[in-house]
Image: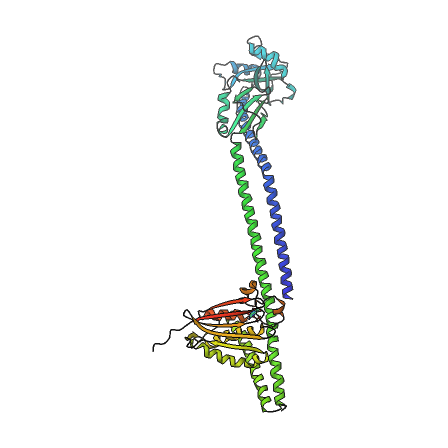
Length: 514
Ligand code: ADP
């Protein structure tokens, strides 16, 4: 039940992770693709802002000059204004070429139309262009015009004065002959990063160095209030560098994004693998419990059956009774072996395995253990031979642990033995400072692919032949652990269908001095 719930939760979590990874991937891709146009737009936008701010600052300077018009406003009649303009203290403010005062009909009061060429020009060409009705009383209005190939800028103030309350126009003409010193202070900073140019509608350059309008991120804007017939143009000098930088940033973002995606996917992969391992281990543990219970049940039922026969006094004669008793003894030994195996394995898992090391003669120990196996060997019709070298050196080991090694190897040799003519050879010999124990059978053998894995806990070969035979999958992992705990090595030689030879070598103790 818990397992099913865990599986469901894992499936949901995996779905969510994969879905969000895909969503991030799509967003990343889109942002990378869209970024170039976003970049161009934002560059153009920031240039537009820059141009607007510059125009505002330039115009603010001109509007500041316009305030001079209000200072000239008459108190009682137009003569007051003329008196101020012609007074000895009056000087022209910077950028101003001259002043005009006229009636709303266009009749010039100052300077008189016939007094100067400029006055005549104003009367004949400029005044007709002024939309008087559009100017609010006491409001300032600008006229930017071109007369005879010349540029003119006027600012004018409409006011009402005199006993009859007539409308008058006070106009100031800007000196546009030398505009460079006027524009320069506003544009010096800008020129460091951008090409800047002011042109009139006929594309004549008014100020700055002309550049191609096809340049990237080019923007232009008309002066909103004053020089409204002129265009202010701007393009960044280092468009390529800006693009390169943006490209690098985009590339970096892309790599970072991909790296994060990779991290998420790898994390998910690790979770998936560990989950798979966990599920496999749980399955193996369940199978282990099933197998162990089954293996215990078999000797238990034999013990029960033969002890019942004996209790009911149905043993035919003393020899039969002895035989039944030896069966009970052998099955008890077998059960003990299984239980010891499981307990040792569980101690090993918990790190609680303890050894009691002493000097051991392996030959004696093997012969002692074989006696216990006698009944089983006969029952399973196994021909066992022991080939023992004389005067073997002693080894340092735990007697129980060494017995477990032999019993597990022998148990496997019988279990996975040949169908008929089963033979098991046990060899004991000394080699290169080691004492070796070999258990050879002529059984089913072990496929090469399984030869490394059979020493893993719970691992069992997946062949039909092995599946038919009950086992818990802990024997060899226990053997390997015990051998290594004794400073020894274990080797396997096997061929499918021809049998297996397990060889355990333990360090030999030096022979005692005579
Ligand atoms: P068990 O025998 O309880 O399954 P083991 O750890 O003792 O567990 O063995 C692991 C696996 O190694 C067995 O399932 C079997 O596939 C294989 N194996 C071990 N010994 C032999 C052998 N002598 N002949 C063939 N296969 C063997």
